[in-house]
Image (cartoon, rainbow, N blue to C red; front, side):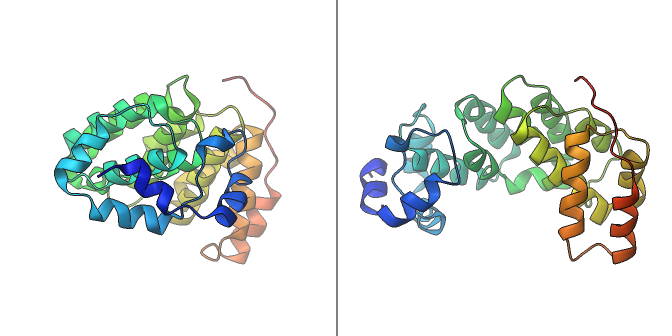
Length: 230
């Protein structure tokens, strides 16, 4: 299968114009305008050998090729292979949309939790913006439910700097306030978040239907902490 030709065939000019507004800074020549459901359907049509061959080709040219790469990696069943493929792919990720499409379900299995948490901590520490963002996303996806470890809150509280990383941290703390209120709210009460993450987390929490009105009012009453250096 010629993946680039398949993606070109699926391109939608109208959707391309719309999507370019959502991913600022990306080279418009690299964007075809293929909707995510069609990219997922393309991944399903690829056999194992085609997927393996595609994953070996980096960097990709088209933005949609990177999305497809993220979709294929997310479907891997073996955690060791998924971790290796994620680590190999992350240096080539240059926008939030591709970053957020990476989510291997095998990372959430209990037997993989400790290994994945260690990897995610390392990704959070990366100087590469979207590697660090993925580290935060990985902790949010896999460690606020059955594999919860309170220390993940500390790790994300210390990760930030710049809009796209702060937004990931804010989403993490919004979900933590929903799922782990007592532990998470303490970070806001003690001023342990940057002012940017604090504000964004409170805003997102107040937009959530899963947080009570009383808790929303309490979050709004908390003072925004002063700026800090990372």
